[in-house]
Length: 349
Image (tube, rainbow, N blue to C red; front, top):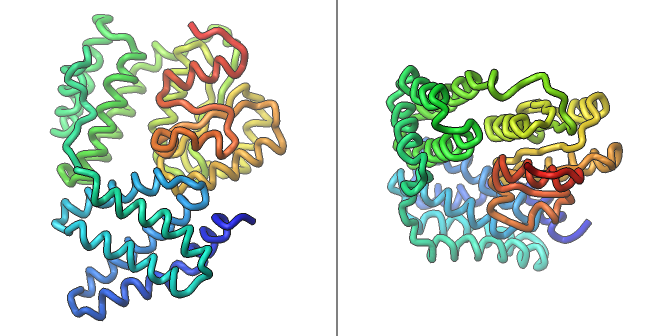
């Protein structure tokens, strides 16, 4: 076991002890309420788990991305950046005092980079709704209908352009649904919308996509097969659902397994379906270790199946897919089809 694996394992094993020390230090100042203490314990455990995962997959850039995401959320609660920096330093101090120096050196690399990102990143406002896109107005209108929780309007917007054949289904997926869902997620993180609004927006988008299935699925013979699935207990399934739909539009025979699928079930479906491609979706870097485990199992039993991966951790760290042993990586659903077609020796149309 290499040093990074040892450090990540130790952080997970000793998580409760580390958290008790870090949160206990805050409590001793007398400036923290009971409710704040419970929230601090919860958040500290999650931070250490994310740190352990980033170390395990050797991705400093994913830890930096996580810290910036956390900083932006804390700002919506009027929590100063200094509190986050202090919290990270307390974790580092504990590791430095209680573990071998080589452990401390590994943790220091990640935490120092995380702290530097908080200090140097300007946190500029941005939007996923690109105003220069040809579909910017449609995406904005669809987004606003979802925010207003107006299901009828949202659905009608999409149905109208499809019936008039003004927009291809692929463009709807890539330039409307994808961008709108990213923007919904950003609004939720910034506390501009509630959890209920976020869930509603996702549900209506999935429903709207389902209304297009008669145009996506057909009985014509397909040359290649693919399985799409979220890894382990990953619950963010809409991304891989969209990937499968784009594959289907590109004349692949697709099998969407969804979220929270045990590794054993994935292996059973690989044996039964015998796909050319297995597409794995990972939304959080903390789920990448599970992705590594599944890839290892597939390599052991089904060496001929090509594996492609996608999701935020791989978009953040462009070399991560190679580190974990995948055959390819895609930035979006359309790119996934291109990569998969190349891997099976086909011609992308």
